[in-house]
Image 1 (spheres, rainbow, N blue to C red):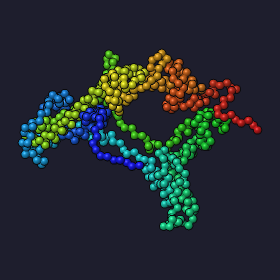
Image 2 (image 1 turned 180 degrees about the vertical axis):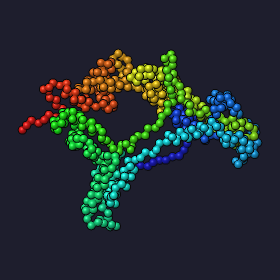
Image 3 (image 1 turned 90 degrees about the vertical axis):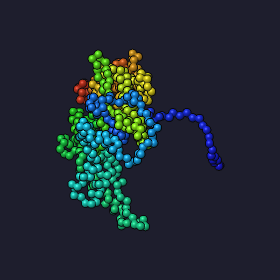
Image 4 (image 1 turned 60 degrees about the vertical axis):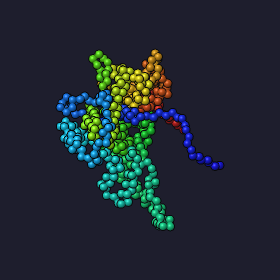
Length: 530
């Protein structure tokens, strides 16, 4: 089989959608949350000398420049005209002394206003105050404790090896035998020790001692190989009823998790009340001792939009742009661009920079307009949420908002992405208000979030001595006008970390409400005598 290769020109017709750089930048700016947008503006100011901030005194009508904050309209009202006839006049060189020709540029930079100095100082102090300390790791926390032990080099190395192989929860998830070093060999590949088995035995003994050292460290329970060992390591003898707690952990941990208290009662002779008390004591132990060193990082958020109720009862949104600086094109560079004495190369450079600055200003204004319209449309649809609470949230799709404001659904998606809405009921991501739903008994729509809240409400109000099964939860929801399948209830119950009906049962109440001669059997029935 041969492959034929040919070289030549070929014409093809294809339809492609090519986005202009200006549109790409607008979409990027739209998608940025407020804090990221602030950082982006700071970078652009540093990288583009034709972009500058409008000083507060200028905004207030001071002596500097009594012009309004720039917008796309302001820029368009003052078109930039390049004088091509005098483009080659200059005796411009790259080492040109800018300070002689345009002294106000460096003068402005050398002597910032008092307000600018105070603002920069406040931002620096805020950044220092909000800077988080680097969190300590479990490995470092345990490794530092090794210095407190008087260990032989072999045991110290073994303990260090155990620490290195712990998982994020503080467990040793592998047998000690897997941590034994290979038997050393000579150049010919033969064992370099006289008795390899004795070498392995000595290594295992050192690892066992090292593991015991690690298990005596803080946090209690670290170095355990399973949950039972982890909990047992945390019983230091100071707890009351220590022997009974150890018995429950060793022999009945699974039954405790499944709430099979009558079965434990029959096997241990402890009463239901005593078992409940012991279980509460076990809840004070830490099943994942290393997890405190691996807490997920929660980035700080700042609301992009605020919603407030008006005197007439309507809800109005406003953007939070206090920290966003007002931008404008530098009048100095505008003058340089229009000056006949400016070199052609300099003029082209300034023109590119001014175009970039103008695009950024327009993109920020476009972001503001799009976000404002999108947020107001969401609030108008979810008025009951703000008036009555989260249980009144309405089903909503992004396409509905896109149709209402006359934009593409991808634009709406970018507008709400990672944006937060501050409401009288708390801070919510804008995506929180887009939810699916189901049909209620009267033919209306009910949001899935409302179904979850109603399910939580039913579980909280159910009889604790006889909790509802999933089938009964379906019936209870139907009484409230919500028709869902059993598998949906099971899915939501598990997703909300609601235990099964067996695990939710309060056996003390069950005993109080049952007849005196009744017998409650939970779990396997006892075997008949032989």
